[in-house]
Image (cartoon, rainbow, N blue to C red; front, side, top):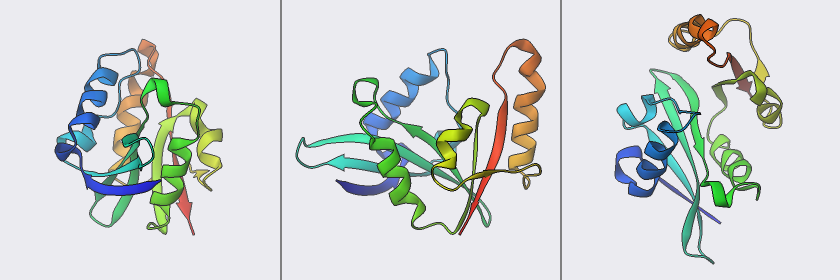
Length: 146
């Protein structure tokens, strides 16, 4: 497997998957696409195809693991875990905002739930969680420091 580093606007397959996911019942955070964030692509040269995607959002000197996306038919093969592990090699301190049910998944990558997150992450989590009374999912912030 090989990692390709690009931006969200430069990868048409990612943008198509992103739009498809946005129209589903589990939409993604649009910020990485709006801001044209860094995009890491896990590429399988044996099959000549991209198999998983991961964005990194940057807020001045803070970094946040963004959308992790694998096409539905390619899921449950460990692609996203492999990609996340590779991407995290370049980040000593990084945050992730995720649905509460994904906490155990991110713990595998040494993320720990934190009570207080830095601005602007805190603002975004608070905003999303404010609307949880409408039936939206609850979010938490996790930090990884190595």
